Image (cartoon, rainbow, N blue to C red):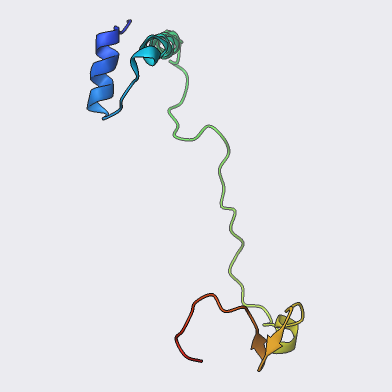
Length: 99
């Protein structure tokens, strides 16, 4: 199956894409290359291939949620560049607003 320049323009219009005239031939060629490749895949014998939604092994990467020992305030602030009243001191990012 091959598509024409008119069909590519029609598809582009449906997708609300604008294809510059100077690129139309390139898109037609690429479209036909993709369709040709899909056609090759359609000829493969897949009779004994199990249907799958994932081709790579997939597992949960999350660790189990186990409560641990919380950091002390001193440990949490150990790497703070500056401290103020027991917390982090950061530069003001907004003007006004009191405090």
